[in-house]
Structures are given as C-alpha cells and as structure tokens.
Image (spheres, helix red, strand yellow):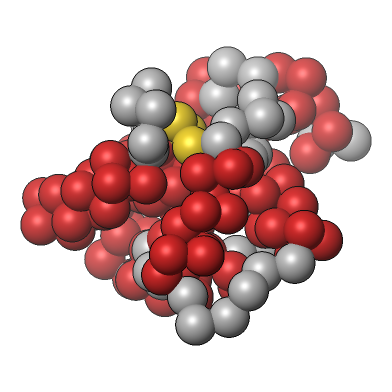
Length: 143
C-alpha cells in the first residue's frame, strides 16, 4: 500500500475525477474495509484526514527506508487533489489502490454507464457539466 502511495502522481482533472468516482463508488466492500482500517490506523488525530506529519510517520513506521522531505512533499501534493493541505479518505483510496485495479474493464464500464446519463454510448459536454459541480475546472478541459 505504501508502495502505491509513493508511486502515485497527479492526474489530469478528468482522470482524477474518474479515479475518485471508481474508488468511492465501485471498490468492493472487502477492499474498502481493508483500506478503511489502514486509513484509521494512520489517522492518529482521528479527524478523518491525514496530515503530512501523519503520512511521514506512516512511512517511518512501515518502510525500510527513510523518506526525504522533498519526496514527502511530492507525494503529499500529488495525493491532495482537493488542495486542502490534508489527505481525505477518498484521496487515500485513490492513491493507495493499485491503478490497474481501479481501472479494470468492469469498473471502467460501470463508470462510463454512470457518466453516460442518456445511455447513447457518448459522454457529452452537457452530461459532464451535469456530473461535475466544478464548472471552473470543466472550462479548462473544454477550451
């Protein structure tokens, strides 16, 4: 799991949205329960989010190598998609789950069906605007 986190990198807005949707809606109960337990064990303050210090402590406790402040900053910034200064649970799910697992054909098909609101096998700009509430981010995608 920490290996997945250390290899995680920032994605485009659209890919991040799809990964977030799949992680929050399409992971099975067993996968979610396991990651919930890990998240809760890392969340020393019990506030439902991970600080940079908590992430650093996780690497120190569970890794055979030290993590530099530079690498920690890079990893943390990549995971914190919402730019809150914390890693929220859904962001943790996306980062700690192997990308191949998240992007299985079955899960991609299910996500596509959820985004294709009129079931015409095309996701239009109009459908994307209805799906995503952040029109400012959509404007940059559709320029």
